[in-house]
Length: 76
Image 1 (cartoon, one colour):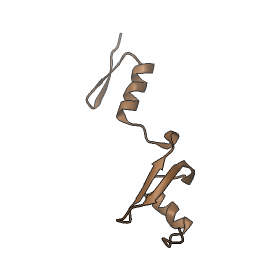
Image 2 (cartoon, helix red, strand yellow; image 1 turned 90 degrees about the vertical axis):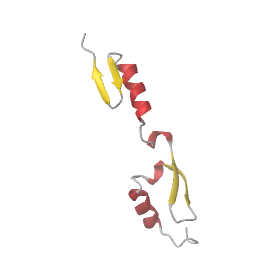
Image 3 (cartoon, one colour; image 1 turned 45 degrees about the vertical axis):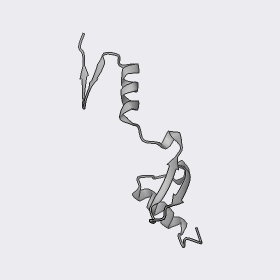
Image 4 (tube, helix red, strand yellow; image 1 turned 45 degrees about the horizontal axis):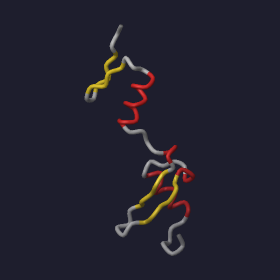
């Protein structure tokens, strides 16, 4: 980081801007040619995807039907 003239505070600030609150959640990081911060997160820190949410809903609530952007409960 010295070579890049970036302090730990600068790195933490860039991570916060990217929505990462804990540096411990980052497995690796790079500074791209254009100056952007690239990073990989541990699995527990990755945001949930729509597919993940649909899978969870179907597993725990089989009566839930997922239609485009709506979640509909089928009342028995």
